[in-house]
Image (cartoon, rainbow, N blue to C red; front, side, top):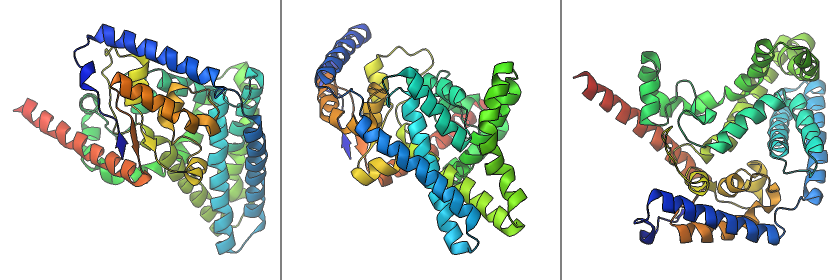
Length: 356
């Protein structure tokens, strides 16, 4: 595990002075990496990635339709899951304008990827931008608002009695809950259109309808019941687990801030984020989100260039007394489970003390 603890020299600074120092440090960091050309678009990386991911998605979808024997069908479903999440990674990068210089081309890529995987691009980008603006800040980060999970003591206190009761087991049902992410994201797309019934959205709904039919109704229309059930549950459950494994460990169990906290952009982005240590395979499987600190500081940086930012960022963090957290994939999950246990236990103790 690599963590850089706050430097003692920084502790005497007032909050306002510290924020000013952080702002100046970030400006200098951005200037350095811009001058180094790291933020320039990387078409030689993204164009083959786009072709391979859309091709793999289409090929695995064809295999699901064509293959009947269950062992090969399982491989086809797992391939479909893999390329679904890879397309979600492209959606993510397009939403941050990291793929193309053109906003229009990024939007077209975002629409193409979300049309394939059954998520609404505009809805996702709006929510995700809110997360980036104030990560792990209560009342501001929508990614902290998860039913039946508590991530801080104040979050525990805001839950109703039923959710408080169930969260004593949240560390145990966290991973099974992740299996529902695939369902919830796609069903959320349907509820989005039901909540926003406008003429413009009617046209957009036609863009997402084929994927919705293919993912939900299609298997039961086209396949025998045993194959339909097998494909339906394997695809949705494994997609949910994979998506949760890519996105959730990056912030859960890290520093949280109260709704009225005033912290610098640099501090909030660094100390709420956790990197996952690894090489090429980790970068591929986690779609670059393992470089979470660098991504949050420079979200428009192409995914393949995020490792180039690492030493620049670590140097600034050390100088400013900010903790830079980088752990293995196993350790990040251990930390997450421990945090879920701790928050639930502390919340129960506090509630018991209040009711006495």
